[in-house]
Image 1 (cartoon, rainbow, N blue to C red):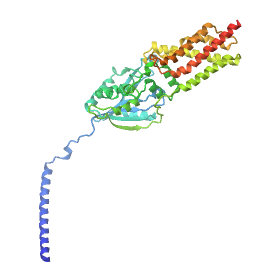
Image 2: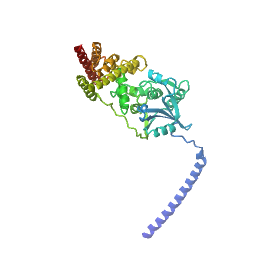
Image 3: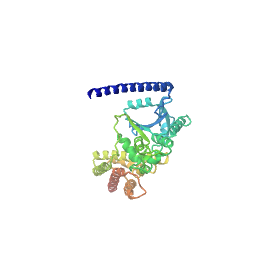
Image 4: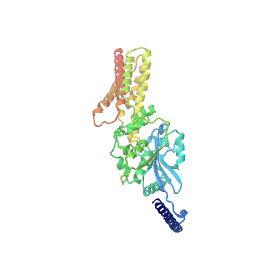
Length: 429
């Protein structure tokens, strides 16, 4: 039995070996035949996975110089065919431009678009220690070509300039509008009507919070226009806000507009706070303290009290008078609509110029303060008091309570001091 099984096994092995040889020979013949009909790999066109044009939003964080505090942005066009990467930005201005300061004051500034090599721009912002973020936008090639062609048209000498407005037409809103047009209004649809309750004033003050004097000057100069609630479309005048808002934008087919985001550089300049500082309590304390000091000095009759009182009163009345002229000029003589109808004119009154001679005379043992000066001082104080009362009226919407809390106690104290000095003078007569 054993020998029979062994012979059967050897015959099976020989048959299997012969069958495998035949299969290998057939396979070799088939492969050779197919290979002869296959073209050389070098002739096969290799399709590039990348689109010919790529569009990105470049967002630059705040810089150290005061005009860089708002940040910046640009549109990046990468052309794989031409091998170029161009950054288009709308934030170019020139201090040496003819009548620059006059145009700046009157709100007729001319900014322009510039097209620069992306690597050069990134290197510049790195040297300024500013953060750099790039967002690749998911746009079709037709949309990308239309945007590129528009930007090239916009850089022509006859199209390069535009009239600048801090809130409505700045480097960020121009970028926003160009991108929105290219994607058929998707950005406006995705940002309009959504809001976090901010105003132009809130954004302006928080962005320059690192420059206290500049921040307070801006706050004094902005009128009620700056206190309207704005949605993300309007708030996109701030580059960082616009970049954040893009994450919620969807294309016509429902896909996110932002395809990818890359952090190119981390800046060393401190990022602005989310909310502006609240000075209401501090200003009230300062106003009450100065008012109390004015009344105390006015109650004394020594030269050591009269001279400081006269210096402070003169400087304060001059400041209020000059401030009123500046606010009136911004309202009546410029195109800065964000400064029109400034309710701080109830606190900084032109009438304060009439009080300067009386204030200066406080340095004398017998100050020249008559009934006219007293009446003017009380009118100024009552205007400041009305500014406080106006906060309950729907027609007065300006967010200037902090300034009222500062100026009202001082105006009241100076009016009371003038009245006391006039009574003393009348008793002597």
